[in-house]
Length: 257
Ligand SMILES: [Fe+2]
Image (spheres, rainbow, N blue to C red):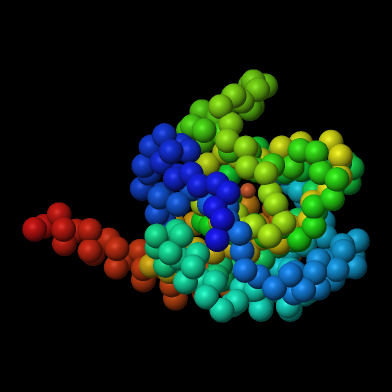
């Protein structure tokens, strides 16, 4: 299986942080997913684009809770061997992201202002797997990561400076990109011709589900109906708080010894 790119998180941002699930940065390698399944998902996404996709912030047009609109996506989420392989690559056990509105998305990026390409940001979800479904006549559109501290980089962007020292990773059909981009500044390189359609399957740590940057305001900016709140709080109650308290107890045990 060919690996096209591999950067550790500490290499990308120049430090190890507490707020990370592992040292996973970005790994792009060939995938084994059924091309016919990806084609079906792509065709359905194009068919419902006008009806269900929206651009609310960050200059990004995408279909939210894509697996609800296109159930075939669930076949990919639970594709045989997928979670084991991705967990091996991440060097920690991963699980599908539980919050339906952002568990899976389909992004449309292109040269037209109607689609655009996402501006500088850091991810709310801990980990994402980006699977390109269609790449057509594309100029630009690579994943660009600022090599350095997120706060420093974002201040430069807000001051109007051009960021230097970027890692640029072009997407390619047949390869998927697994990335931990919480508090890692990145964007899609502006697109001057063509378009790209991608499926994003989000993930998190099984053991540290509270390491997550999807704040309620950030979710609400994209999902202003607040229908996700019960699911969000249920997850905090059932998974995040117990895991956090277990980690705290474990930590204080270490300090006491
Ligand atoms: Fe992102």
